[in-house]
Image (cartoon, rainbow over all chains, first blue to last red; front, side, top):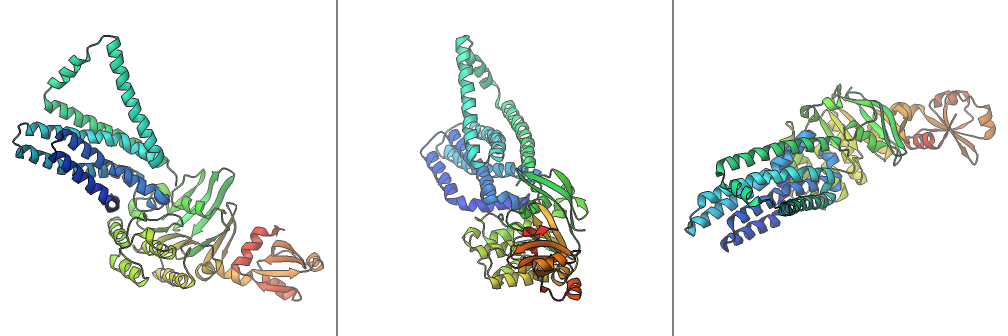
Length: 217
Length: 283
Protein backbone atom coordinates (compact mmCIF):
# COMPACT_ATOMS: atom_id res chain seq x y z
CA UNK A 1 0.00 0.00 0.00
CA UNK A 2 2.85 2.40 0.91
CA UNK A 3 4.51 1.83 -2.45
CA UNK A 4 1.25 2.47 -4.30
CA UNK A 5 0.54 5.66 -2.35
CA UNK A 6 4.05 6.89 -3.03
CA UNK A 7 3.63 6.13 -6.74
CA UNK A 8 0.44 8.19 -6.90
CA UNK A 9 1.98 11.05 -4.91
CA UNK A 10 5.00 11.09 -7.23
CA UNK A 11 2.70 11.09 -10.27
CA UNK A 12 0.90 14.05 -8.74
CA UNK A 13 4.07 16.06 -9.45
CA UNK A 14 2.95 16.08 -13.09
CA UNK A 15 -0.14 17.99 -12.09
CA UNK A 16 1.55 20.48 -9.80
CA UNK A 17 0.50 23.46 -11.97
CA UNK A 18 -3.13 22.42 -11.74
CA UNK A 19 -2.63 21.80 -8.03
CA UNK A 20 -1.13 25.26 -7.42
CA UNK A 21 -3.71 26.94 -9.64
CA UNK A 22 -6.49 25.61 -7.42
CA UNK A 23 -4.72 26.69 -4.25
CA UNK A 24 -4.28 30.23 -5.56
CA UNK A 25 -7.79 30.31 -7.00
CA UNK A 26 -9.34 29.26 -3.71
CA UNK A 27 -7.16 31.75 -1.81
CA UNK A 28 -8.34 34.45 -4.24
CA UNK A 29 -11.97 33.45 -3.73
CA UNK A 30 -11.59 33.65 0.05
CA UNK A 31 -9.81 37.02 -0.19
CA UNK A 32 -12.63 38.26 -2.44
CA UNK A 33 -15.04 37.19 0.29
CA UNK A 34 -16.78 34.34 -1.54
CA UNK A 35 -18.93 32.04 0.58
CA UNK A 36 -16.28 30.17 2.66
CA UNK A 37 -18.30 26.95 2.93
CA UNK A 38 -18.65 26.84 -0.85
CA UNK A 39 -14.88 27.31 -1.34
CA UNK A 40 -14.02 24.59 1.22
CA UNK A 41 -16.46 22.16 -0.38
CA UNK A 42 -15.27 22.98 -3.89
CA UNK A 43 -11.56 22.55 -3.11
CA UNK A 44 -12.10 19.31 -1.14
CA UNK A 45 -14.07 17.76 -4.02
CA UNK A 46 -11.57 18.87 -6.67
CA UNK A 47 -8.60 17.55 -4.67
CA UNK A 48 -10.38 14.23 -4.05
CA UNK A 49 -10.63 13.95 -7.81
CA UNK A 50 -6.85 13.45 -8.05
CA UNK A 51 -7.53 9.81 -7.27
CA UNK A 52 -9.40 9.56 -10.57
CA UNK A 53 -6.45 10.96 -12.48
CA UNK A 54 -4.19 8.45 -10.68
CA UNK A 55 -6.42 5.67 -12.07
CA UNK A 56 -6.03 7.22 -15.54
CA UNK A 57 -2.24 7.17 -15.16
CA UNK A 58 -2.40 3.51 -14.13
CA UNK A 59 -4.47 2.41 -17.10
CA UNK A 60 -2.56 4.57 -19.61
CA UNK A 61 -0.24 2.64 -21.95
CA UNK A 62 -1.44 -0.73 -20.65
CA UNK A 63 0.14 0.11 -17.28
CA UNK A 64 -2.23 -2.13 -15.29
CA UNK A 65 -0.56 -5.32 -16.55
CA UNK A 66 2.82 -4.42 -15.07
CA UNK A 67 1.28 -2.91 -11.95
CA UNK A 68 -0.30 -6.23 -11.03
CA UNK A 69 2.99 -8.10 -11.37
CA UNK A 70 4.23 -6.06 -8.38
CA UNK A 71 3.79 -7.44 -4.85
CA UNK A 72 0.32 -5.97 -4.34
CA UNK A 73 -3.13 -7.52 -4.31
CA UNK A 74 -6.15 -6.26 -6.19
CA UNK A 75 -7.84 -5.55 -2.84
CA UNK A 76 -4.92 -3.34 -1.79
CA UNK A 77 -5.06 -1.51 -5.10
CA UNK A 78 -8.78 -0.75 -4.69
CA UNK A 79 -8.32 0.34 -1.05
CA UNK A 80 -5.41 2.60 -1.95
CA UNK A 81 -7.57 4.60 -4.37
CA UNK A 82 -9.92 5.60 -1.53
CA UNK A 83 -7.03 6.36 0.82
CA UNK A 84 -5.30 8.45 -1.83
CA UNK A 85 -8.51 10.37 -2.62
CA UNK A 86 -9.03 11.04 1.07
CA UNK A 87 -5.41 12.10 1.54
CA UNK A 88 -5.43 14.57 -1.38
CA UNK A 89 -8.95 15.83 -0.56
CA UNK A 90 -7.95 16.08 3.11
CA UNK A 91 -4.80 18.05 2.26
CA UNK A 92 -6.79 20.58 0.25
CA UNK A 93 -9.46 20.68 2.96
CA UNK A 94 -6.97 21.39 5.78
CA UNK A 95 -5.23 24.23 3.93
CA UNK A 96 -8.43 25.90 2.73
CA UNK A 97 -10.24 25.47 6.05
CA UNK A 98 -7.34 27.03 7.97
CA UNK A 99 -7.27 29.90 5.48
CA UNK A 100 -11.04 30.39 5.64
CA UNK A 101 -11.06 30.36 9.45
CA UNK A 102 -8.16 32.84 9.53
CA UNK A 103 -10.00 35.17 7.13
CA UNK A 104 -13.13 34.89 9.26
CA UNK A 105 -11.18 35.82 12.39
CA UNK A 106 -9.29 38.66 10.66
CA UNK A 107 -12.59 40.07 9.36
CA UNK A 108 -13.87 39.92 12.95
CA UNK A 109 -16.93 37.89 12.02
CA UNK A 110 -18.87 35.62 14.34
CA UNK A 111 -19.73 32.02 13.45
CA UNK A 112 -16.21 30.59 13.16
CA UNK A 113 -17.36 27.51 15.07
CA UNK A 114 -20.23 26.98 12.63
CA UNK A 115 -17.83 27.38 9.72
CA UNK A 116 -15.60 24.61 11.10
CA UNK A 117 -18.63 22.37 11.67
CA UNK A 118 -19.79 22.91 8.08
CA UNK A 119 -16.24 22.24 6.85
CA UNK A 120 -16.18 18.90 8.73
CA UNK A 121 -19.57 18.04 7.25
CA UNK A 122 -18.25 18.63 3.72
CA UNK A 123 -15.13 16.58 4.46
CA UNK A 124 -17.40 13.61 5.17
CA UNK A 125 -19.51 14.38 2.12
CA UNK A 126 -16.33 14.16 0.02
CA UNK A 127 -16.09 10.54 1.22
CA UNK A 128 -19.55 9.95 -0.20
CA UNK A 129 -18.34 11.50 -3.43
CA UNK A 130 -15.36 9.08 -3.52
CA UNK A 131 -17.72 6.18 -2.85
CA UNK A 132 -19.55 7.03 -6.08
CA UNK A 133 -16.73 8.01 -8.43
CA UNK A 134 -14.02 5.40 -7.65
CA UNK A 135 -15.93 2.27 -8.73
CA UNK A 136 -17.27 4.09 -11.81
CA UNK A 137 -13.74 5.04 -12.87
CA UNK A 138 -12.38 1.54 -12.15
CA UNK A 139 -15.18 -0.12 -14.05
CA UNK A 140 -15.43 2.13 -17.08
CA UNK A 141 -11.99 3.75 -17.29
CA UNK A 142 -11.16 7.41 -17.85
CA UNK A 143 -13.15 8.08 -21.05
CA UNK A 144 -16.33 6.08 -20.50
CA UNK A 145 -16.18 6.80 -16.73
CA UNK A 146 -16.63 10.51 -17.40
CA UNK A 147 -19.77 9.87 -19.47
CA UNK A 148 -21.19 7.45 -16.88
CA UNK A 149 -20.55 10.03 -14.14
CA UNK A 150 -22.35 12.76 -16.10
CA UNK A 151 -25.30 10.40 -16.68
CA UNK A 152 -25.28 9.49 -12.96
CA UNK A 153 -25.36 13.15 -11.88
CA UNK A 154 -28.11 13.77 -14.45
CA UNK A 155 -30.17 10.91 -12.98
CA UNK A 156 -29.75 12.28 -9.43
CA UNK A 157 -30.79 15.80 -10.52
CA UNK A 158 -33.74 14.44 -12.49
CA UNK A 159 -34.83 12.38 -9.49
CA UNK A 160 -34.71 15.52 -7.31
CA UNK A 161 -36.72 17.43 -9.90
CA UNK A 162 -39.30 14.64 -10.14
CA UNK A 163 -39.67 14.50 -6.33
CA UNK A 164 -40.13 18.29 -6.15
CA UNK A 165 -42.71 18.22 -8.99
CA UNK A 166 -44.54 15.29 -7.41
CA UNK A 167 -44.65 17.09 -4.06
CA UNK A 168 -46.07 20.16 -5.78
CA UNK A 169 -48.64 18.16 -7.72
CA UNK A 170 -49.69 16.25 -4.63
CA UNK A 171 -49.63 19.50 -2.65
CA UNK A 172 -47.14 18.13 -0.08
CA UNK A 173 -45.28 20.69 1.98
CA UNK A 174 -41.58 19.73 1.86
CA UNK A 175 -40.49 22.96 3.54
CA UNK A 176 -41.61 21.63 6.91
CA UNK A 177 -39.37 18.55 6.44
CA UNK A 178 -36.44 20.77 5.44
CA UNK A 179 -37.10 23.00 8.46
CA UNK A 180 -37.23 19.96 10.76
CA UNK A 181 -33.86 18.71 9.48
CA UNK A 182 -32.35 22.18 9.82
CA UNK A 183 -33.61 22.40 13.38
CA UNK A 184 -31.65 19.29 14.40
CA UNK A 185 -28.51 20.01 16.37
CA UNK A 186 -25.35 19.72 14.28
CA UNK A 187 -23.71 16.98 16.37
CA UNK A 188 -26.13 14.15 15.47
CA UNK A 189 -26.32 15.36 11.84
CA UNK A 190 -22.55 15.21 11.47
CA UNK A 191 -22.40 11.83 13.21
CA UNK A 192 -25.09 10.53 10.81
CA UNK A 193 -23.31 11.91 7.75
CA UNK A 194 -20.03 10.41 8.99
CA UNK A 195 -21.57 6.95 9.52
CA UNK A 196 -23.42 7.05 6.20
CA UNK A 197 -20.20 8.11 4.43
CA UNK A 198 -18.19 5.32 6.08
CA UNK A 199 -20.84 2.75 5.19
CA UNK A 200 -20.96 4.06 1.61
CA UNK A 201 -17.15 3.92 1.28
CA UNK A 202 -17.06 0.38 2.65
CA UNK A 203 -19.82 -0.76 0.27
CA UNK A 204 -18.13 1.04 -2.58
CA UNK A 205 -14.78 -0.59 -1.69
CA UNK A 206 -16.37 -4.06 -1.88
CA UNK A 207 -17.76 -3.20 -5.33
CA UNK A 208 -14.35 -1.88 -6.44
CA UNK A 209 -12.62 -5.07 -5.25
CA UNK A 210 -15.08 -7.13 -7.28
CA UNK A 211 -14.48 -4.93 -10.34
CA UNK A 212 -10.69 -5.28 -10.00
CA UNK A 213 -10.88 -9.05 -9.46
CA UNK A 214 -12.86 -9.45 -12.67
CA UNK A 215 -10.46 -7.34 -14.70
CA UNK A 216 -8.10 -9.05 -17.11
CA UNK A 217 -4.97 -7.44 -18.38
CA UNK B 1 9.76 -26.43 -9.51
CA UNK B 2 9.67 -22.63 -9.48
CA UNK B 3 6.95 -22.35 -12.11
CA UNK B 4 4.67 -25.01 -13.48
CA UNK B 5 1.81 -24.56 -15.91
CA UNK B 6 -0.36 -27.65 -16.27
CA UNK B 7 -2.66 -28.00 -19.28
CA UNK B 8 -3.63 -24.35 -19.21
CA UNK B 9 -6.27 -23.26 -21.65
CA UNK B 10 -7.43 -19.80 -22.62
CA UNK B 11 -9.60 -18.91 -25.60
CA UNK B 12 -9.88 -15.49 -27.25
CA UNK B 13 -12.25 -15.65 -30.23
CA UNK B 14 -10.69 -18.14 -32.62
CA UNK B 15 -7.33 -18.30 -30.76
CA UNK B 16 -6.78 -20.91 -28.07
CA UNK B 17 -3.74 -21.23 -25.85
CA UNK B 18 -3.35 -24.83 -24.77
CA UNK B 19 -0.07 -25.78 -23.19
CA UNK B 20 2.02 -27.02 -20.29
CA UNK B 21 5.41 -25.71 -19.19
CA UNK B 22 7.89 -26.32 -16.39
CA UNK B 23 10.67 -24.11 -15.12
CA UNK B 24 13.30 -26.10 -13.22
CA UNK B 25 15.37 -24.52 -10.42
CA UNK B 26 18.63 -23.10 -11.74
CA UNK B 27 17.34 -23.12 -15.32
CA UNK B 28 16.97 -20.41 -17.92
CA UNK B 29 14.05 -21.52 -20.05
CA UNK B 30 13.37 -19.83 -23.36
CA UNK B 31 10.08 -19.41 -25.13
CA UNK B 32 10.20 -18.85 -28.87
CA UNK B 33 7.49 -18.51 -31.46
CA UNK B 34 6.30 -16.28 -34.26
CA UNK B 35 4.21 -13.16 -33.61
CA UNK B 36 0.72 -14.08 -32.44
CA UNK B 37 1.81 -17.59 -31.39
CA UNK B 38 0.65 -17.02 -27.81
CA UNK B 39 3.84 -16.02 -25.98
CA UNK B 40 2.33 -12.97 -24.31
CA UNK B 41 -0.85 -14.87 -23.41
CA UNK B 42 1.33 -17.58 -21.83
CA UNK B 43 3.25 -14.95 -19.83
CA UNK B 44 0.02 -13.29 -18.71
CA UNK B 45 -1.31 -16.69 -17.62
CA UNK B 46 1.88 -17.34 -15.63
CA UNK B 47 1.43 -13.98 -13.88
CA UNK B 48 -2.27 -14.28 -13.09
CA UNK B 49 -3.11 -11.29 -15.28
CA UNK B 50 -5.81 -13.22 -17.13
CA UNK B 51 -8.23 -15.84 -15.89
CA UNK B 52 -7.81 -19.33 -17.29
CA UNK B 53 -10.56 -21.44 -18.84
CA UNK B 54 -8.78 -24.57 -17.62
CA UNK B 55 -5.59 -25.82 -16.03
CA UNK B 56 -3.48 -24.51 -13.19
CA UNK B 57 -0.42 -22.39 -12.61
CA UNK B 58 1.86 -23.15 -9.67
CA UNK B 59 4.60 -20.76 -8.54
CA UNK B 60 7.02 -21.72 -5.73
CA UNK B 61 4.92 -24.91 -5.34
CA UNK B 62 1.77 -22.86 -4.55
CA UNK B 63 -1.30 -22.26 -6.73
CA UNK B 64 -0.93 -18.77 -8.17
CA UNK B 65 -3.99 -17.34 -6.40
CA UNK B 66 -2.54 -18.38 -3.03
CA UNK B 67 0.69 -16.42 -3.43
CA UNK B 68 1.14 -13.77 -0.77
CA UNK B 69 2.61 -10.32 -1.54
CA UNK B 70 5.76 -11.65 0.19
CA UNK B 71 5.94 -14.54 -2.32
CA UNK B 72 5.42 -12.01 -5.09
CA UNK B 73 8.49 -10.13 -3.86
CA UNK B 74 10.45 -13.15 -5.06
CA UNK B 75 9.35 -12.53 -8.64
CA UNK B 76 10.84 -10.01 -11.04
CA UNK B 77 8.94 -9.25 -14.20
CA UNK B 78 9.55 -7.53 -17.52
CA UNK B 79 6.58 -7.18 -19.87
CA UNK B 80 7.10 -6.19 -23.48
CA UNK B 81 4.19 -3.76 -23.65
CA UNK B 82 3.83 -2.54 -20.09
CA UNK B 83 5.94 -1.05 -17.33
CA UNK B 84 6.07 1.70 -14.74
CA UNK B 85 4.23 4.86 -15.78
CA UNK B 86 6.25 6.85 -18.31
CA UNK B 87 5.57 9.95 -16.21
CA UNK B 88 7.89 8.68 -13.46
CA UNK B 89 11.66 9.19 -13.41
CA UNK B 90 14.20 6.49 -12.48
CA UNK B 91 14.65 8.35 -9.20
CA UNK B 92 10.88 8.00 -8.57
CA UNK B 93 10.97 4.31 -9.51
CA UNK B 94 13.81 3.79 -7.02
CA UNK B 95 11.72 5.26 -4.20
CA UNK B 96 8.68 3.18 -5.15
CA UNK B 97 10.69 -0.06 -5.41
CA UNK B 98 12.21 0.62 -2.00
CA UNK B 99 8.70 0.71 -0.55
CA UNK B 100 7.51 -2.37 -2.44
CA UNK B 101 10.42 -4.80 -2.05
CA UNK B 102 12.18 -5.60 1.22
CA UNK B 103 15.29 -6.85 -0.59
CA UNK B 104 15.52 -3.94 -2.99
CA UNK B 105 19.19 -3.00 -3.38
CA UNK B 106 18.92 0.72 -4.00
CA UNK B 107 22.64 1.41 -4.28
CA UNK B 108 23.22 -1.39 -6.75
CA UNK B 109 20.20 -0.35 -8.84
CA UNK B 110 21.36 3.26 -9.06
CA UNK B 111 24.92 2.13 -9.81
CA UNK B 112 23.74 -0.19 -12.60
CA UNK B 113 21.56 2.59 -14.06
CA UNK B 114 24.51 5.00 -14.04
CA UNK B 115 26.79 2.38 -15.63
CA UNK B 116 24.19 1.89 -18.37
CA UNK B 117 24.10 5.64 -19.01
CA UNK B 118 20.50 6.08 -17.84
CA UNK B 119 19.56 9.60 -16.73
CA UNK B 120 18.02 9.38 -13.26
CA UNK B 121 15.94 12.53 -13.41
CA UNK B 122 14.41 12.21 -16.85
CA UNK B 123 10.90 10.87 -17.25
CA UNK B 124 10.85 7.30 -18.57
CA UNK B 125 8.60 8.28 -21.48
CA UNK B 126 11.33 10.62 -22.76
CA UNK B 127 13.98 7.86 -22.85
CA UNK B 128 14.88 5.91 -26.00
CA UNK B 129 13.31 2.46 -26.54
CA UNK B 130 16.60 0.80 -25.60
CA UNK B 131 16.91 2.81 -22.39
CA UNK B 132 13.32 2.00 -21.42
CA UNK B 133 14.13 -1.70 -21.91
CA UNK B 134 17.21 -1.43 -19.69
CA UNK B 135 15.24 0.26 -16.89
CA UNK B 136 12.67 -2.55 -16.94
CA UNK B 137 15.31 -5.29 -16.77
CA UNK B 138 17.40 -3.57 -14.09
CA UNK B 139 14.29 -3.00 -11.97
CA UNK B 140 13.27 -6.67 -12.31
CA UNK B 141 16.75 -7.75 -11.18
CA UNK B 142 17.06 -5.26 -8.34
CA UNK B 143 15.40 -7.17 -5.50
CA UNK B 144 17.00 -10.63 -5.42
CA UNK B 145 13.99 -12.34 -7.01
CA UNK B 146 14.30 -16.12 -7.33
CA UNK B 147 12.04 -16.19 -10.35
CA UNK B 148 12.41 -13.82 -13.29
CA UNK B 149 9.80 -13.69 -16.03
CA UNK B 150 11.13 -11.67 -18.93
CA UNK B 151 8.95 -11.05 -21.96
CA UNK B 152 11.10 -9.75 -24.83
CA UNK B 153 13.69 -8.03 -22.60
CA UNK B 154 16.05 -7.44 -25.53
CA UNK B 155 13.45 -5.66 -27.70
CA UNK B 156 14.72 -2.31 -28.91
CA UNK B 157 18.31 -2.92 -27.80
CA UNK B 158 21.27 -2.66 -30.18
CA UNK B 159 23.79 -5.52 -30.49
CA UNK B 160 26.15 -4.20 -27.80
CA UNK B 161 23.37 -3.46 -25.34
CA UNK B 162 21.93 -6.94 -25.98
CA UNK B 163 25.25 -8.61 -25.27
CA UNK B 164 25.61 -6.53 -22.11
CA UNK B 165 22.12 -7.54 -21.01
CA UNK B 166 22.76 -11.23 -21.67
CA UNK B 167 25.90 -10.98 -19.52
CA UNK B 168 23.87 -9.34 -16.74
CA UNK B 169 21.36 -12.20 -16.91
CA UNK B 170 24.13 -14.82 -16.71
CA UNK B 171 25.63 -12.98 -13.75
CA UNK B 172 22.21 -12.93 -12.09
CA UNK B 173 22.04 -16.73 -12.24
CA UNK B 174 25.29 -17.20 -10.29
CA UNK B 175 23.69 -17.90 -6.85
CA UNK B 176 22.28 -21.11 -8.42
CA UNK B 177 18.78 -21.15 -6.90
CA UNK B 178 17.25 -18.76 -9.39
CA UNK B 179 15.30 -19.44 -12.57
CA UNK B 180 14.35 -17.37 -15.56
CA UNK B 181 11.57 -17.74 -18.13
CA UNK B 182 12.47 -15.57 -21.08
CA UNK B 183 11.07 -14.90 -24.53
CA UNK B 184 12.78 -13.21 -27.43
CA UNK B 185 12.21 -12.94 -31.12
CA UNK B 186 15.99 -13.05 -31.58
CA UNK B 187 16.76 -16.75 -31.47
CA UNK B 188 20.54 -16.33 -31.18
CA UNK B 189 19.98 -14.59 -27.82
CA UNK B 190 18.16 -17.64 -26.54
CA UNK B 191 20.60 -20.09 -28.14
CA UNK B 192 23.44 -18.54 -26.13
CA UNK B 193 21.54 -18.17 -22.89
CA UNK B 194 18.94 -20.87 -22.33
CA UNK B 195 19.21 -24.34 -20.86
CA UNK B 196 16.03 -25.47 -22.57
CA UNK B 197 13.64 -24.08 -25.11
CA UNK B 198 9.91 -24.25 -25.72
CA UNK B 199 8.67 -23.52 -29.22
CA UNK B 200 5.10 -22.25 -29.36
CA UNK B 201 2.87 -21.94 -32.40
CA UNK B 202 -0.88 -21.26 -32.68
CA UNK B 203 -1.18 -21.51 -28.90
CA UNK B 204 0.42 -24.97 -28.67
CA UNK B 205 3.88 -26.07 -27.57
CA UNK B 206 5.23 -27.80 -30.67
CA UNK B 207 8.68 -28.55 -29.29
CA UNK B 208 10.43 -28.70 -25.93
CA UNK B 209 14.10 -29.54 -25.91
CA UNK B 210 17.34 -28.92 -24.05
CA UNK B 211 19.31 -26.30 -26.00
CA UNK B 212 22.44 -28.49 -26.15
CA UNK B 213 20.43 -31.35 -27.63
CA UNK B 214 18.74 -29.04 -30.08
CA UNK B 215 22.02 -27.62 -31.31
CA UNK B 216 23.92 -30.93 -31.17
CA UNK B 217 21.47 -33.63 -32.26
CA UNK B 218 19.03 -31.79 -34.48
CA UNK B 219 19.93 -31.23 -38.11
CA UNK B 220 18.70 -30.75 -41.62
CA UNK B 221 18.93 -33.23 -44.46
CA UNK B 222 18.71 -32.08 -48.05
CA UNK B 223 17.51 -34.95 -50.20
CA UNK B 224 16.30 -35.55 -53.73
CA UNK B 225 12.90 -37.20 -54.23
CA UNK B 226 14.61 -40.51 -54.86
CA UNK B 227 16.72 -40.27 -51.69
CA UNK B 228 13.61 -39.33 -49.76
CA UNK B 229 11.77 -42.36 -51.03
CA UNK B 230 14.54 -44.70 -49.79
CA UNK B 231 15.24 -42.87 -46.53
CA UNK B 232 14.70 -44.44 -43.10
CA UNK B 233 12.29 -41.87 -41.63
CA UNK B 234 12.28 -43.04 -38.00
CA UNK B 235 14.01 -39.88 -36.78
CA UNK B 236 12.50 -37.37 -39.20
CA UNK B 237 10.25 -34.80 -37.52
CA UNK B 238 9.24 -32.56 -40.42
CA UNK B 239 9.52 -32.42 -44.22
CA UNK B 240 9.38 -29.42 -46.52
CA UNK B 241 9.21 -29.44 -50.33
CA UNK B 242 12.07 -27.66 -52.06
CA UNK B 243 13.14 -27.20 -55.70
CA UNK B 244 15.77 -29.96 -55.37
CA UNK B 245 13.50 -32.40 -53.53
CA UNK B 246 12.93 -32.16 -49.78
CA UNK B 247 14.41 -30.53 -46.70
CA UNK B 248 14.01 -32.74 -43.65
CA UNK B 249 14.37 -32.00 -39.96
CA UNK B 250 15.78 -34.76 -37.77
CA UNK B 251 16.39 -34.96 -34.04
CA UNK B 252 19.17 -37.59 -34.57
CA UNK B 253 21.55 -36.29 -37.18
CA UNK B 254 24.25 -38.72 -35.99
CA UNK B 255 22.09 -41.65 -37.14
CA UNK B 256 22.00 -40.34 -40.71
CA UNK B 257 25.68 -39.36 -40.62
CA UNK B 258 26.57 -42.94 -39.85
CA UNK B 259 24.09 -44.68 -42.12
CA UNK B 260 23.69 -42.37 -45.09
CA UNK B 261 26.77 -40.16 -45.33
CA UNK B 262 26.05 -39.40 -49.01
CA UNK B 263 23.17 -37.11 -48.00
CA UNK B 264 23.86 -33.37 -47.62
CA UNK B 265 23.45 -32.46 -43.95
CA UNK B 266 23.55 -29.26 -41.91
CA UNK B 267 23.71 -28.78 -38.17
CA UNK B 268 20.53 -27.39 -36.65
CA UNK B 269 20.14 -23.82 -35.58
CA UNK B 270 17.19 -22.57 -33.56
CA UNK B 271 15.92 -20.55 -36.52
CA UNK B 272 16.02 -23.58 -38.84
CA UNK B 273 14.27 -25.75 -36.29
CA UNK B 274 11.55 -23.12 -35.77
CA UNK B 275 10.97 -22.74 -39.48
CA UNK B 276 10.80 -26.47 -40.08
CA UNK B 277 8.63 -27.21 -37.05
CA UNK B 278 6.12 -24.54 -38.07
CA UNK B 279 6.19 -24.65 -41.86
CA UNK B 280 7.15 -28.28 -42.39
CA UNK B 281 4.81 -31.19 -42.94
CA UNK B 282 4.52 -33.68 -40.08
CA UNK B 283 5.39 -37.24 -41.12
